[in-house]
Length: 100
Image 1 (cartoon, helix red, strand yellow):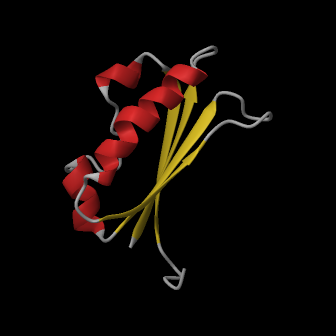
Image 2: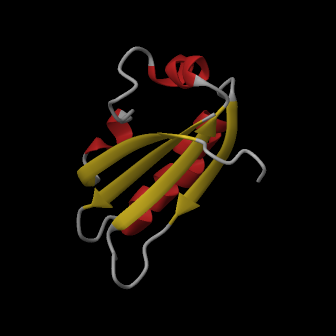
């Protein structure tokens, strides 16, 4: 299993627009992907008012590449969200403990 961690810092004043985009477009698109096991959305807290987090867990590397294509090390950015984003970060991890 693979964990994909996507962090997005949005421009000031764009938090509601980005959260709406994530909830209405990005999460439903992810849920339709073959091999996706889970999705978690983290919304801003006081110390990070412009930062969102999307954690997805994938069955295997092939499932992840089915979503991303060969550019699996790059964020998948929809044109509708591009202007909302100030900065993105992307990391991947192998699942160490599969019991949970």
